[in-house]
Amino acid sequence: MENKAHALAAGAFVLFMTALLIGLGWWLSRDGAERETYELTSRDTITGLQPQAAVRFRGVPVGKVTNISFDPKTTGNVLIRITVDKSAPITASTYATLGYQGVTGQAHIQLDDSGLSKEPLESFNGEPARIPLRPSLMGRITDQGTQLLVQVEEITRRVNQLLAPENQKVMLGTVAQAGEAAQSFRQLAVDMRAVLGTAGGKTPDANVGEVLHTARGTLQSLQTTSEATRQAVTQVGQTVKRLQDSGGVLDKLGQGAEALAQGAGTLNANTLPRLNQVSDEASRAVRQLGRTASTLNENPQSLLYGNGPIAPGPGEAGFTAPAAAPAH
Image (cartoon, rainbow, N blue to C red):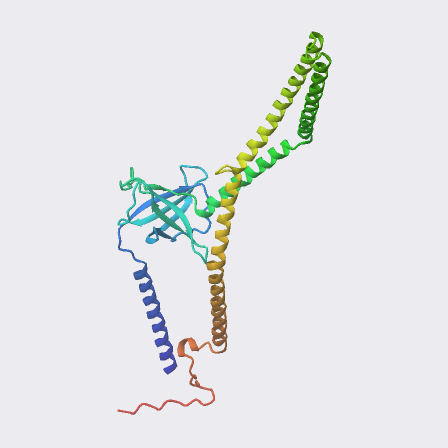
């Protein structure tokens, strides 16, 4: 009878503690604040975002995510429904981005305001108002990196086209023509001196005409060569200018490299040490859980009677029958 009484008392205690935990959970989860429902829609991925995720306005907790589904109004978009405290200053210029925890990688909604409007954002026709969801920092870096690679590929293709074998032949031909034009000028000067020396300072009409005809042909050849050279130099100059302009390929490549370097520095300085700490704590928790499981396996009665020695029952060595109650 006494063992049954102990078991009944232990069962009643377990039921009482269960009811107490349920009540405590309900009390902690209840929310008496007035909240407003809003919707976010985006074509970007929302990896890491889960229902009940936090919603923060400039870092201050103001609500939570209640539902994540596909947008019925826009095919392919993700629809996120959130509830926000009515005291939060949500206006028509408020926008949302995805933020990520440094260690766990869990996502949350980060609200901010550009300050372009002071009018409160209100629902229309009973439907929740929509807040635009802008790409996060990592999303912008990914998009800029993709565009940068496309531009680098285009520049490489143009440079390869400029340095193609047929274009190289044209450039070499232009240089050769320039050399021939220079040689023609030198020969023209020699002929002019010879003609003037023969005429004693007076140039005969036939010789002068021949010299002028030769000079005209040489000038035309030089003009053609100069035009071809100018076009080639212009193309090269335009290509170099696109590479070196502010906001051009080299500038964006430098910005992308700087952003990646900053991300790597943040990862080494903050994320990896915290990740190592979490790993150590998880290892300790697993060891403690293993010891607890071993204890329960060896002595399952410890859940009801604790870790102390258990009194032997009837039929066991050392059992002592309780004294009979005195008769009245």
